[in-house]
Each structure stands twice: as structure tokens, then as C-alpha cells.
Image 1 (tube, helix red, strand yellow):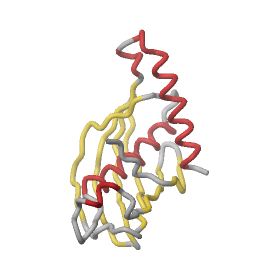
Image 2 (tube, helix red, strand yellow):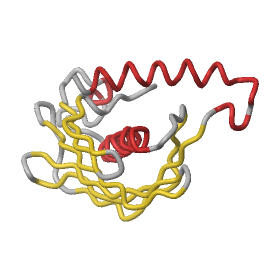
Image 3 (cartoon, rainbow, N blue to C red):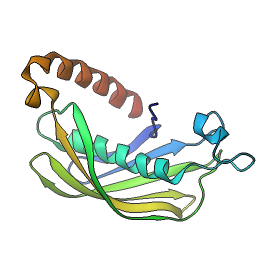
Image 4 (cartoon, helix red, strand yellow):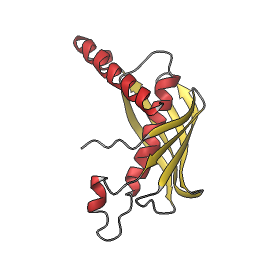
Length: 155
């Protein structure tokens, strides 16, 4: 199952920071089980929203497009307030270090100024063709899809 945990990118400064939002609604499939009678966004999905925002920041920072962004590590994650249906999770992520295709980030997710999640994480970027040259066309298809998604998020 794929989770799109960024609804809109509000601000993006390549090489610096991104501000994005996730509007939580009862339509989110995972809320039916987490928890019955008390639906809240799972903590791991709050973290994933930060990671997805960081991935968009990395894509827009790198000098050449990369089709794959992978999570390398997560550190010092803390959870605070709940994110409930009707809430808007505002995610702010800063790029702390970039070396080659690997990047380190710190981020926070807030609901009405209350911190819901914070932590640090690292991502790496590459193209499928870097490892399997015969799949270069796949990179182009993935990059086209990502460009469409980015345009949707920044409208």
C-alpha cells in the first residue's frame, strides 16, 4: 500500500528547507483500525510525512534528477500531540548536510503549533540505471511521474 502523506508544498527553498502540509481526514484508510473509536494518525506515518517532504527537498536540490530516494537512517524521533481527523499536520524539514547523493535532515511536524513529531533522518538518491543500465527508460518514466506529482503539490 502506498501512502501519500503530503497534500501540498507551501514553501521550498532548494538546498535549505521545505514547508508542507497533510490534511488528515476520516477517508484515510489506516484510521479505521488506528484506533477504533479514537482515530489518530500513526506515529510512523507522521514520520513518513517528514521523510516524504525531505525527499521533495532533496529532489529539488540535486543538480541532476534522480528517480529513487531511499531512507538511510532515522534518529532521535520524538512524538508529542496526536494528529486527528480534521487536523492539519504542518511539516517543516531542513537540509543539514549534502554529500554526493546522500543528505541529512531535521524536521518537525506540528498541529496548531503543538509538536506532533520531530526527528532527524538521512536519505540517498540514485537512478535505477546507475545499477542496471538496461533500465534507463524506467528512470525516465519515474521522473515524469514525479514531475507531475510535484506540479500537483505546488499548485
